[in-house]
Length: 434
Image (cartoon, rainbow, N blue to C red; front, side, top):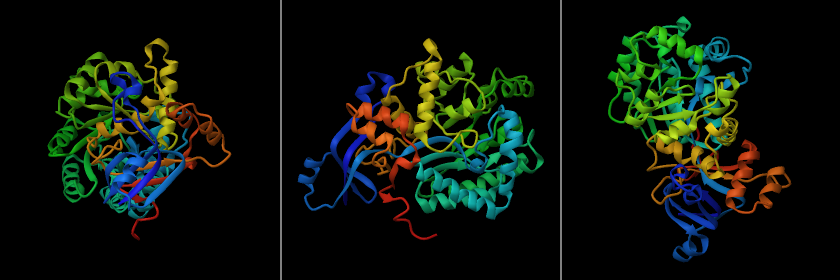
């Protein structure tokens, strides 16, 4: 066993359901006791040392220890496409994202990208993610194998499309069914890996393809896609599905809106779509930097929260501007401020919740990740800025833990990630060789 000691901060409560401060837990001189990668005790250092006097102590001073970040929407094939600014969604896909995604047909290329992507997640403090995969089964094998090696909580799946994209990214409903079923057989529920049925969006997935998606949903299988991201996209979807009541209904009438469904964006929902999400217990991945970079719009967080819809954050790389979840939280804060009275004011406690426990809840991982509750996996991020940096100066003068969180969300970068633990193993130090 090991005792990790320092300032420990998490959100075991839900700040959207009452006083945000009631959701925050802070142990200023605290400790977490970890055995076999699992949290066995959490509290003051003095109390836990008294109960376990012989256990080694790892000091994590000069910063704060928070749960590992949870990214609920990120595209692994787009890591090398970050920075295509100045374009709306559909133009960006055609000019930036899809040409790069086509390169993953080369398995060696996909292997390199998978390693870069997963190491990028870890160096940014992300330990769990719902990953939008590749159109190529061999690339998915590379992603799952590399994620298994690193011990990450990764849920992902083959991307399915049978129209509207470049030809090399299309598959038939028949091949989609066979390839997805085989990938799920090999990788679903293997360690910390899970499978997600992943049509790109209904713009590129016919009713026949969405029927295949429904056939693939089984025990523990997840579902992920896009909805209501961009007004031009919404108009095109309406033209392709004249019988659908709205964009979300293109999925709903195939039984794809469930408690294991996570829909990215939902920037422009109608009331009926919000009601459908709430009724079926589906979640939404809000992707703030992507929405702003593509000019997609300002996310109506209040409308989701007031209906009880689970909302978490996603980086949406490569339209998003990086893998560091606190940056997404800061952008989410800005968006709600810009919405004025229609926005939902966010505190630092909300922001910590959105990058940790909200994501764990959206992905059905609340029993394993998202906070430092006893019995959960020790997935953790030690944020410790360099001495003399602007963030270090600000943390030194923070009034309390909530004020320290505000300064972290305003100023932190991946350079301030001093350590990451994945189920108790220090990332980059305790991995076996590949």
